[in-house]
Amino acid sequence: MSRASSRRPAPARTVKPKRRPQPKRQRRASILDHAVARVPGGEATVKKAAAWSITLGVGAAAIAAAGWLGVFGLVGTAMAEGIGSLGFRVAQIEVTGLKRMDANSVYAVALDQRSRAMPLVDLNGTRDRLLEYGWIADARVSRRLPDTLVIDVVERDPAAVWQNNGQLMLIDHKGVLLDEVPAHAIPRLPLVIGEGANAQEPAYQRLIAAAPALKPMVKAATWVGNRRWDLLFQSGEQLVLPEGEEAAARALVRFAQMDGTMGLLGKGYARFDLRDPTKLVVRMAPNAAAPATDDSKAGDGAAAPAKDSGDSGTGNGVG
Image (cartoon, rainbow, N blue to C red; front, top):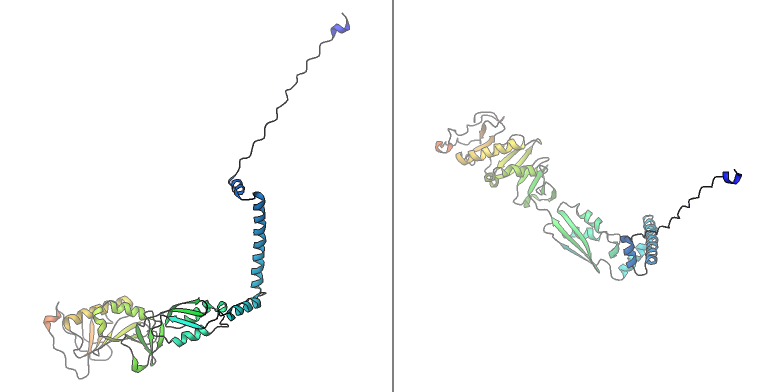
């Protein structure tokens, strides 16, 4: 056999097919792309606007920093004074809401400015100084160009007269001091007496509200020892109440009921003591005859209060 016939034929080479290039996927347009497309000039305009925004932001920050450092303080003041010289300067003050407070005090505060040029008027500072007056509960200060400063005042209402160490002061329902009161011109308002009685005015209003029938009969209320009230009636009697707001209110309601059935006031008594809530201790006025007992008015088997024999507040009483 020949050598040529003994060779095996070479295997045929397989040719791999070439991959076809895949078409690139088109990116979907976002909402931002649509917005940019609608802007006249397209993306170039948006880039310019962004650049200007950054520039302006940096500039504003620089100006703010310079103002904080006082660089432009003198320049700003000079400009404000220049505006004032053109007629924008405080020439009139209009005040509304005053009823009792002296208007001159308000004018003095309004005119107390480092400059009367309208741009330099300190509105917040003026309001703060006005609120230092007891009469003023609130105030609004504004400019009315070209030359008017407008001040709207809300006054407090006097609710009582506070007497302490011989001094008389008007106070509102929260106990805020309003103004001094001359002794010859005391208004027809409740009188509270004693150290700290002004701060107890809200508590006194709640107390007297528990027995409204007695309110017109009360002449004065004395805050004793920073713990309790004594009431003085128009007819001259004194009612001694216990400590504690609730206990005092219950005692006052009980006294109002007893006065309604037995007629205690205006009958010659000097003092009623209800510090012990289980009984009423009374003291007769000097040289006063014992009042006659009307059993038909007593009701529930109660007897008229007995005379107290001493000043200590102890003695016979009605349970």
